[in-house]
Amino acid sequence: MLSFCGQDRSRLDANGRIKLSPRFISDFQKNGGGEVVLHCLPEGALAVYPEKNYLKMREDGNELAEKAGLSMVSRRKMRRFGALSRTEKITSQGRITVPAPYREYASLTPGEEVTVVGCEIGVEIWSTSQWASEMEIINSHFREKGEREMSSDLLH
Image (tube, rainbow, N blue to C red; front, side, top):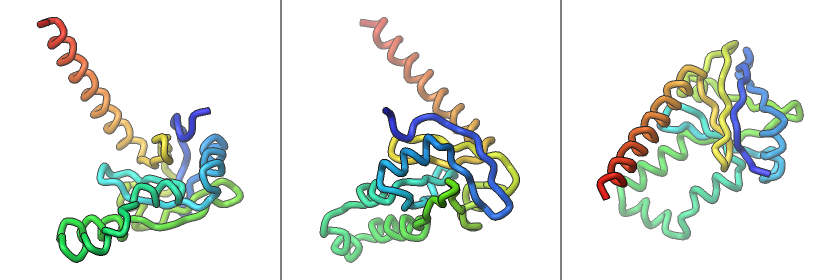
């Protein structure tokens, strides 16, 4: 069975909580339990990763401290991940609390619908309007790429 695939709609409640679908809850349980990491994505959405997946993404061996000492880019990368990530726990009711600064970052408003999207290693939480814009960007990119491939193929 595929993990973290598909998309659902949910509503952000007045306390900043989102209820996940049973399918996604099951995926989180299979991938390390209810401990998750919220991370603000540059695209304007929130990623929710099982903690073990997040730690794999951040693995950098013993070189992390050395890189931080030598590179401003490395320090900024570490700051971004550190400042825009935090651990949370999925409640027994299947909800995740999204802290106010994270809601603001992702344009999530209490009482409004959000889109929860599987991204194979976790889920992403999008404002529904921003998700529609992101899908248009993705689909446009793949149409243009397909047209270039077809044109190239026809020339040979």
